[in-house]
Length: 303
View 1 (cartoon, rainbow, N blue to C red):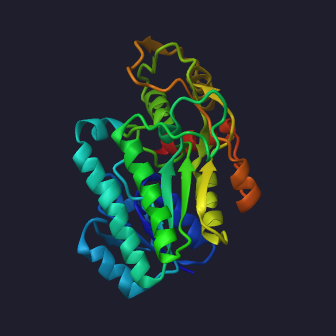
View 2 (view 1 turned 120 degrees about the horizontal axis):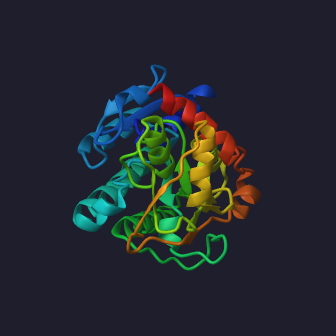
View 3 (view 1 turned 45 degrees about the vertical axis):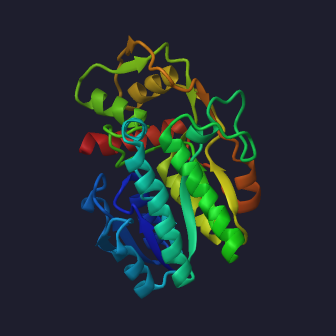
C-alpha cells in the first residue's frame, strides 16, 4: 500500500518507516525535523520536510492519496507541555485535526500514536482500554484530545481511524534528551562512563516495549477491520532499579546508580494490559527486555 508516516524521521516513526519498506510498501516520511533526524530515514522511503500544521501537508496528502496515514508527529516532552501548554496543544491537537482533515479529503485511514501511561495515570494493575483516564500533564491531555477527535471523525464521517496507546517504548535511535527515554539515558551514561541517576528509590515500575514490536503493532492496527483504541505494551512491570541492572548487564558493566530525590508528579506504577490488542489484532510483544536492551546497547555503542 501507499502510506504516509508523520514524524517519520523520529525515533518510533523511522522504525515504522523501515517496517513498511521491508514489506514492500510505498512509504512517504513527513517530518519537520524539530526533533527528528533526516539520517533516520532510509533511501527506500521518500522524505518530505513538512510541519503537520502547515498547508503543505494537505497538499501532499491530496497529491499522494495514501491508503493510510500513520500519525506519529507530536510534541512529546511532558516538561515542555507544562511550560508551554498552548504550544503543546497547537502541535498535538490542532496538528492532529489537520492530519484528520487531510486524510478525510483523500479517503485515507488514520492510525494515531497515543500514550498509555500518561493517560491512565497511576495503575494498581495493568490498565485496560476502558479504564478511567486520568491525564496528569498537558501532553497527556492533548493526546487524549487527539483520541477524541479520531472518535468524533469516526462517528461524523464514518471513518475507521485507530489509536494505539503506547507503553514506554525503547530501542535504537531513541534520544537521551527526550522525555521517556530512561533506557537511552542509562545506556548513554554507561557508554560515556558517567554517573547514572535514579529518581526516588527506583521501585517505581514501567512497561517497557521494544520499538520493533511497536512498529509491528502499527501495521496490525492498519490492517484491522474496525476502529477503536488499542494498548501496545508487554503487560510486564519492571522497576527502574531492575531496569538499571539490566542495562548495566547489557553493557557488560558493573555500576551502581546514584539516587536523587524523586520528582514531584512522577507516576509510581504504569503497566498496560494488551489483551484486547492480542485478541483483535493478533499482536503481542515478542522481544524480551533483556534481548531488546542488548540490541539497543549495540546501537548506542556504535554511535
